[in-house]
Length: 196
Image (tube, rainbow, N blue to C red):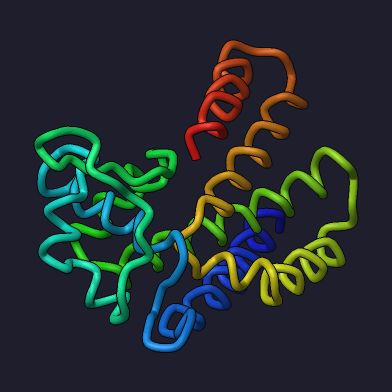
């Protein structure tokens, strides 16, 4: 029954985030603020294997998801004109494959799946570690992830959901029976967080 409940809340969270993928973030743009920077970095990693987004900006690669002018967040770092987004690189690294395969929609869909994983692990943590009754906990988790802010962040290109996955996974590992695997998972979660 725990696995079924986890699948249910994962489906609810993923579905709520997927439903918001096509919502406009602002007038004339599907993504806004820092989101284009993350997506441009993911494009650059997938095509050029680097974080220099100067060519992506020059080619206006942001137009499919950000039809208005790009917020100037980068400057030329040297005489070659290299520009690197001022954001930590782990989110673009995570989005490189989805962005390469299906563009901004696939990148957002991948983050929706991450939201589903966070919801499932949150339920497992509540039921297993804290002894919450399974189906009432599932109802609470599903309701929270189907409503703002969780549903909104599940569909936005921000590190919030991957960071939440690190936190929940880290708590699960830190509260597990001591083992090498639990230690490595906890360390990986803690190390990943600053890079998001």
